[in-house]
Image 1 (tube, rainbow over the protein chains, first blue to last red):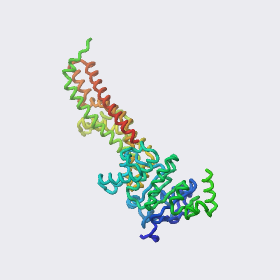
Image 2 (spheres, rainbow over the protein chains, first blue to last red):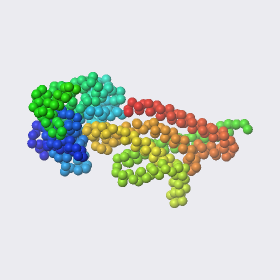
Image 3 (tube, chains in turn yellow, red):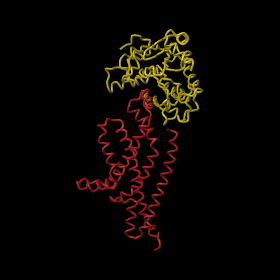
Length: 257
Length: 218
């Protein structure tokens, strides 16, 4: 199966998702082209996190299609073990960063980074250690190799989590409110790492609350509300002169906060 | 009546032989209880209620009946049915399963405290369900269980004394032989008590050390 838009790294087509009676995603379509950075903004409860989690299949969508690098992620015809194999293979190429970091507390920083390459790619331990060092250096944590997560600050934890995702050399990085759980003074160090990735043309899909950051790094921004994409476009246009009333309302609210 | 510890000294070799059996029992049953417990807890927590029903029944049975009765049942009960097993085998597995049941309960509680985010993070890297359990969830639950596992282990070491009733010549039975010859129960029992106390002091400090070391991994 070849995707119609071959350039798109991630494509979400008419996706619907409900939790019981609550329709979180009503009809969402978006695409992330290779090397592009797309930001998703919207009020809490708008479905933006659910959308991002659906791309990684942490949520199972009810209808629609999700494509990643020419392969359909949700494959209703694949069941049980066959689907497990399929999704595990896809996830290895898709980095995910969580709001709560979710570092493995029983492993050191470098073990967190090298676990997946060693176990999933069968990389030799020595080679993996070099890889781990490389990615920890990339996020500015060379001196924290053998430190356990309990001894790291929130910002450091999130940077290790980013290094952990990068170590699998993903084709896309998904950020689910990566800085929302951080103290304000720690936000910038994580943003810096994400900006660096942007410079290196990593394909990224970012769910965020931070308008300034979104405007600065992204190629395109989406405003999602009540399960629909309300407005989509150039971030400068979207943030400064939104055409939709709901976007204007949301942005005004964010500014007064 | 005066206390006389000279007979204890002359029978010290047989007490030491008993100590060796006590240690062998404690280590073997300890390993079974620690790893059997996590196996039971994992199966109970992560399979359907129907699959885990027999296990839950056995845990309930082992926790709900006296250890002494279990040992007699396995030793004399099976002998009556012509299933002859060495006393040492029954001792190790009887004690091991009994405490595996208690540990399973500890692990089950610990498994439930591991946040779902840990599971999702491992899955998002591409790990399958089972590898996520064995690499991420179970090790964390084991670290969190160390304090309570330690308590159970200390109680279990003391319960090796009960195995004297099925004829395993561990320390208490060795003392009883010596007492039957020397008629010095106080001296022998107090000596054995002190040895048990010393074993548990060592065990406790080891556990404390390990517990402190594991704190950083929580």
